[in-house]
Each structure stands twice: as structure tokens, then as C-alpha cells.
Image 1 (tube, one colour):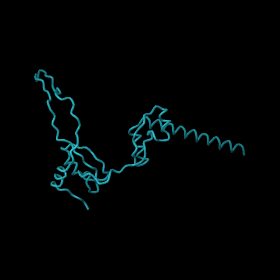
Image 2: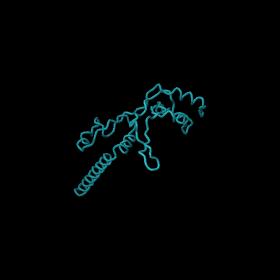
Image 3: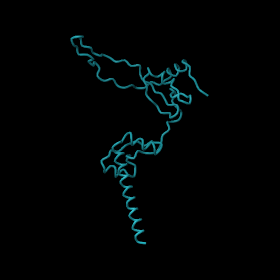
Image 4: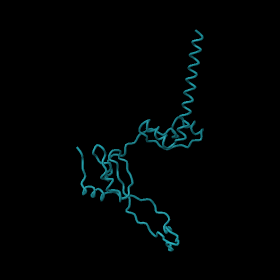
Length: 175
């Protein structure tokens, strides 16, 4: 069954949205134009008005996101390929789905002492869902470290393969 939202339902959800703190405004009285031969006057921004920010929740993962109120109606109307909606303004009853796997560079990992000795910084990520997510996290957030770790693993594996080949050759010779 494909669910649909009317404009009135989207409007109601937008009104129900929980207000959220927006980004701080820096540089009040910011000079936008210093003046030149075309426009000799200085243009200064005195104040910045915002529509405000609200929280929305993913209907599948239950993750909370911050969105500008001007974009809220478009986000609430966005549909998933299966027909359901991506977002709601209602806070889910259950917390977001969280994994239990840690980043390879987490201080609680068994290999951390080795990685720390290599000069890597610790990572606090501790809620990854799958081993694939761990690897993707490493590829995206710790590219240099991941490349070095992978290269070390490959070199170790090659050394083990070479040692095994030597043992096999020695066993064949000793027959």
C-alpha cells in the first residue's frame, strides 16, 4: 500500500516540528561591499534573520536530523522508493538503531597499542553495525591509516605465504 500525505498533513506536521537551535551567527556588521567607482557607498549587513531550525526523524533508522524550517515541507514530502516517507516530525518511541562494533582505531580495540605506537590518533566511533561499516568508516574517515594497515596486513600475509612455501619445499626435499 502506497501512503500519501496531503498538503494539509504536511502543513500540520511542519507546525508540530520541534524547534532546534540553529547555527550561531558570526560577524554581525559584516562589510559586504567596501565601495568602488560603481557604488561608492559601503554596504554593511546589520542583522541576519533565519526561518529557524527544527528536528526531523528518519522513519527507518530513527536518526534525528537538523533542518532549516524553509526546507521542512519538501523533506516531509520526500518518499522512499517503496512508497513510504523518509522523514517525520514525530520523535520515535524507540531510540535509533545502533551497532556495537568499534572503529579499528578505537582505544578499546586489541590492536590499539600497535596503532598508537604508529602515531595514529584514537577514534571514538563505537556504534558501527557490521564489519563492512567498520571498513567503510576506515576508508572514509581514516584513509591514510587504513591504507597503512591494509599494506601491513598484505605484507604479513605475503611473508606467511612465503614461509609456508619454504616449509613445503623443505618437506619435499627431506623425503
